[in-house]
Length: 154
Image (cartoon, rainbow, N blue to C red; front, side, top):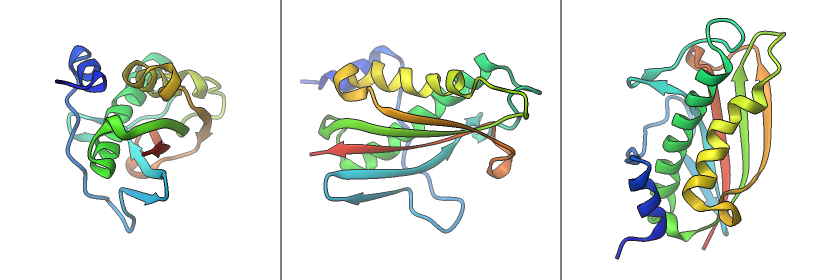
């Protein structure tokens, strides 16, 4: 029988990607005790960095879509870390970095793209999380958004 999380992913038309190779000197995740720290993932579009700055070339709705695509990649890494997303007891924290102009103030709305998908997949009791969203001057490879997460697992 398919687990409810897998059913939700299928209903949303989401196939989780395989574990990506880090682009620098770090590991994709670290597990310590019952916590998994998933390294920051940048937004990708058509397999390449989703480049741009919020408030300039990219608007809030497109940024929100970029954050949603990151959530899918984060879930792929989390699945690789624990073997089965059914082992996730809680998404604890999400931290989002939004490549934005000095006047852009909707980083929180961009980050909703990730947060909302996590709740859709895990439900409110497991998927709702603490969160920070920051505007930054630049992200590696010119990406528009980077997000990391911490999860509690069995």
